[in-house]
Length: 422
Image 1: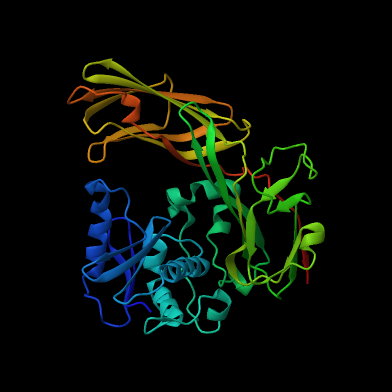
Image 2: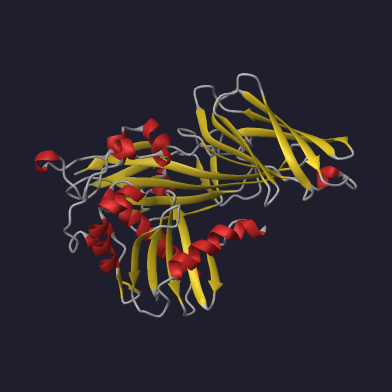
């Protein structure tokens, strides 16, 4: 049971606000945004997805630069509310075609109609796009594809912009229905390296995502790699001496959407399903065995005097030159007594950004893109307010890196065959 739901922009503007029970003050949106904005300034990092302030529980998820927030005074399951927020974001995206501030403002009547059907007096009714089509009749206002912004840049490289911004409920011009289906494999990697460059921990959280515009409820068959193993722990997926062979993909565990039938999955790794309207995960999986990370990072910090030090960071892309990574951000915490940082980029560097955040003593290096096989270097000179005591390397780091690589997956899981039966 939730009391309020609202969607905020990156500036903290309230785009959508719905108060279901009247138990929480009206100014909760402003209180929430101030808490989240200044949480990092207090040196505590990013705000957690769930926190309490003045007796009010705040739950939030961030999607496409928008904050989806729910509040309540009662003790509810955090996992339930966070999953509800994610599903609301997914339903809104299904109806509007694209999740952005401009799309929400142009379709606020439709969004409020969706919220009234999804939640009634704080209780969840349904989050199914297919079910909502029977009760929501407003047509979405199409957003100009040129106004997608940075959030849709890498998506546009893989398919036409007009495709990814289409609503699942809107027809083409002339009332024609569209017969299209899109399947994507999305993976999030988490790798920890030692100071000498060895891998300490590695994990992949992956999803096979499907977005369907098909009519007539056809049966879909997705065939994965035949050499997919499940549940073998502690071995590298590059153990070519295993019985599964060199093309083996070893999953620690996985789960499937409720519409997926697994009758032949154990035999030939084929998934059968009748897709629901909209976008949904067909399969979620996790891999903790060793895999080859796409990047290699080397960081060196040395003292250059009583109040100075020099930092050198090298990033090498260990993937084919035909693949390009974008939205790369490298971060490294510095000693608390760091007062100034001057940066020196390599000659000919284009699209690089550097920054030093005084509040949390963090150095950031942003790269617009990295081509496979290339290497990039950043030099930085640090100025301290006092002499460093002991080993300076223990007071700086660890280095963290975030990135996006379209058309690349480290697990080597593939959808080999996609067939439809009408």
